[in-house]
Amino acid sequence: MGFWTDLLLVLLGMGLLFGGGEFLVRGAVSAARRFGVSELVIGLTIVGFATSTPELLVSVQAALKGSPEIAIGNVVGSNIANILLIGGFTALIASMVAPDGELKRDLRVMLASSALILPAAAWGAIPRLGGLLLVALLAVYLYAHFRAARHANAKPDSADGPDTTAMDPLWRSVALVIGGIVMLVLGADWLVDGASSIARAAGISDAVVGLTVVAIGTSLPELATSIVAAWRGRPGVALGNVVGSNIFNVLGILGATAIIAPLPIATRFLWFDLPLMMAISIGFAAVLTAGDRLGKTAGGLMLAGYAVYTAVLFLTPM
Image (cartoon, rainbow, N blue to C red; front, side, top):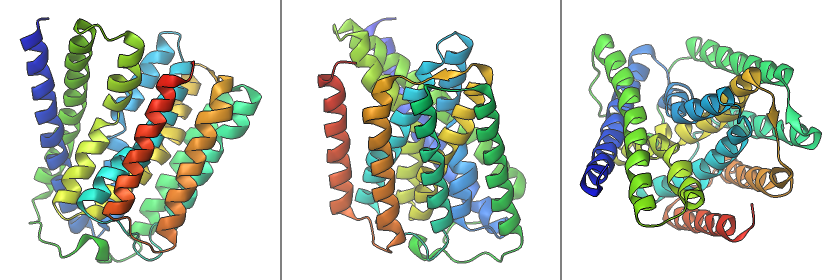
């Protein structure tokens, strides 16, 4: 493809990403109001899991092609990007604060699920039985979440401000959610393809393209959706999206991929990437459970931290 075709793909991809994020947020918020479920819960489940679709597709495809080790880097890198990059951008737009008690359980699940990778890394691989266990834990988590939501009345999410979103008919909410997911997947794919072609034509190596365009590309749906949610005054959806995506990445994506093919874990993940992911997750959870707001200053520091992490990846032999 020529330069202008690639550029068109990039622009169309960006448009689809933010359009899909708008549709997904509108449909999910409307569905939350209709079923009496808090927007944070919707962000943790439907939005958080839906925006992790690219990571799932990349990891499963890698396993089917005989390269399951790619899934580890995909999940660990995405979880770090979700907190530092996406959380940072969201905090710059609208301060994030956890509703009292509502998110603490999910933050603990996020930390516990992330910690499960450490013994597997020490062992050297995640076997098929381990994958089944991860998927089973995800099923239990989802069942507990929706069971609790069904038996509890919806509570106003103080972090999201007043509810000004009109309630759409159920069929329209479902259509918006499905349409938003499709647009997010297509947008991420087109943007990555176009940007990769432009980068290679400019003489940038495949390794650099993979570490930047492709790695961040699988997190673009989360980024677009969280930014749209923050702009619409729904930081609770954005916060739930980050936490829910990180839970699904470990339990759902690694679990499903390990069932297809056992996942070998390289030594470098054990001494650098996994401990860093855990440290970032613990710090993120500690700030939110303490009731502190993540505002513009915190958002700037998180983005700076992600820039440093990316620089280390470039400078450290892989």
